[in-house]
Length: 164
Image 1 (cartoon, rainbow, N blue to C red):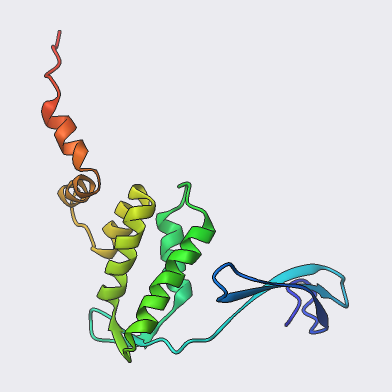
Image 2: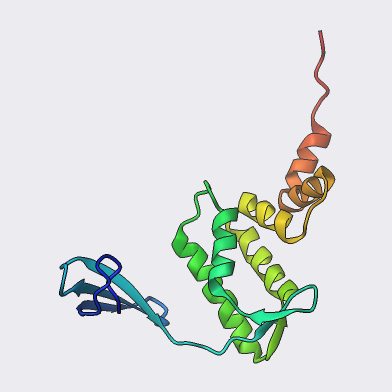
């Protein structure tokens, strides 16, 4: 493993710990050259299916692409990175368990949306707006009403305010 600071290949593992679910190993390393410490993660490489895009193109599954989209949707929201990692882990397990050679990007996107809805409604609407390509404010309102059905009820039961 190359040191991220001095790029030396000479380093040693000083601590290894397994994640709670047993699917990931965290390793603390120290560089022999510059003595700086860094962390690496090791996971089993699972053969993921090819992703079929809306236009019919096929591309390899990309975990980082999904994580990046989630991080953008969750920007300035109280959602820990660990939660996003776990969300992606869950999606990967589901995809892997399907045993398919190909999966549509739509299936992956809908799975992300359903899981994100449970974590943070604002991030959910942000992600859905990009994923579903909202074109006007009415689509945002419909999505918000789906997440917060009480918002519609609250609005309809309010008494009109007097203007003066």
